[in-house]
Image 1 (cartoon, helix red, strand yellow):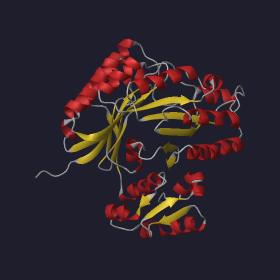
Image 2 (spheres, rainbow, N blue to C red; image 1 turned 90 degrees about the vertical axis):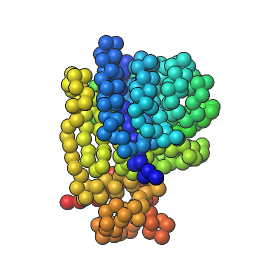
Image 3 (cartoon, rainbow, N blue to C red; image 1 turned 60 degrees about the horizontal axis):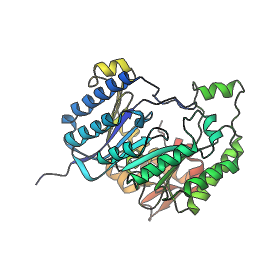
Image 4 (cartoon, rainbow, N blue to C red; image 1 turned 45 degrees about the vertical axis):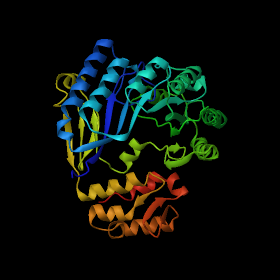
Length: 384
């Protein structure tokens, strides 16, 4: 009898978009059709060429992100997924997600995705206000989002995530609440909602406009109130918060992202894609010319994680989940207890009301206040 194969997640990076959003610092940008075609062919070679070295794994999730994957020619994207199915062993209930933006999909394209095995979509709305969308350089309108969402439902998608953002330039609390009410009022309801606060990244056009005073960001207090509104309105609409920025209807958590937070093995394909495989982190080159020339010879930044680094990751990634971390799993992986390694830190944060022990100490999780101060708490689990 063969032993059960180890679980693996795949990430596929498609870096193209119609126009880069003003806040975006991802490895992405516009490209002509010849460049897109050359990249998709290189990506197919990489995915196929890595299959042999990953034969001992079974793939439980595939996430196609970007950029905007839906700007790629639909047949090319379907071919990538065909290569994955042909060359890798997938679990029967594999989760296959594709990120799409309104204005880049229609029912016909989405039906091709469905036929290619895609069973989860992530649609980037960000705001239900056209003025706010324009302020951050989004290419779509609210009407185009409605058309994309309707097309996804008509194509048979039942597992749909919608992204929203708070603290946008010119946004007030009432407008943000209207966005949340709009999204939770969609029929059928999205299975999942990701709600992020705008982060101003140095080097982006938005950063430059803020620095010159052309654009003003919302005040910190307003941002905090929007954060509280997110928790309140989504909970009232039946969504469970299972991670700092992610909410889902019961049973609809994003399996792929949960894998990141629980340190499952994952391999990234495409330019700049990161991987974690048997406690080794590495990433692909950021150089497009190098990637197109040799997609199987582009890995770099190898890092064999030490036991201490693995313990740090176990804690500060796992605590992002509202369920927290399993102390038994920690002991099983590292041969020491959380008390032995982090006893003082845990006791301090328990006393401060930022952590809670549950299930007779079997789980440690952030409290509601701890989630609000997550970065502060997590930083304490970094070892000297």
